Amino acid sequence: MIHKKISEIQHSSVLHIVIGAFDGMHLAHQKLIKEAVDNAKTNNETSMIFSFEPLPKEFFLKEKFGGRLLLAPQKHSLLEEFGADHVIIADFKSIRNLSENEFIKILLSKADKLVLYSGDDFRMGCQEGDSYTEKNVARIVHQEIIIDGDNCRASTIRNLIKDGEIVRANKLLGREYTIYSHSVSGNKIGRSISFPTINSLPNNQIIPQAGVYFGEIKVQDIIYPTAIYVGKRPTVHGIELRIESHILEDFPYPNLPVNTPTEVCFIQKIAEEKSFKSLEELSEMLYNYKIVSSALAAERYNKK
Image (cartoon, rainbow, N blue to C red; front, side, top):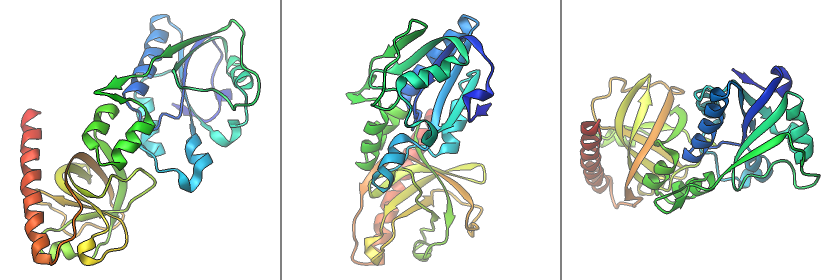
């Protein structure tokens, strides 16, 4: 169960707590949370995940913030899956000015002792104010996880996605990067050249680098393999950024209603964005992208 305030939970003797923004819920986040929950269960003690909305960088940087890896509802759902005794999603604006000392004293109002779990780059509380030095707070600090040379942290993953390095980003996430959105009406240019697409509206998540990707789209609780285009459609002098998914097999909803929820999953980049001289030339290249995507789909599903 998710709470908004720590005052909503009962007092514990020992509280194992992991604190963070948890954008992306990547492998380092998962390892940290799992250790806190497992240790609490082993010792018959209490576990807590403490997060906040909005993300600190989202709050301070505003329009300069490049985008989230996970929307809040999806992050909260993933946090609940770890089976912690308590999940707190606090209003960041209400706690942003607390010092480490003030913040820990609030936590200690609900426990006799705290065991705090964090990565080695985590800083608690605002920069001004006293640190907490009493003995009833133990700290377990994890060293940074490196996977195939990449540091497993949200900033690294954001940069990889913006650079089109989806395979590397997915390894750090522990799953495929997914944009949660809804369908919007398009210009039906793809349909006119036998490549109909489902158009999804970009949101405040990180948008992958312009180009063509193999991936999947979840629509009406069914997952379909797709070739995904991200970009502004230079061939037809487009202006707005689009995420267009062409389903590789027969799609039973050719006239999908607008505002239908979509989950667009990016698995592998297969081509850079290009401008073509004509729709005929575009159609030929789209056919090639479909062949490549179909081959990747066959390989993916044969492995499962």
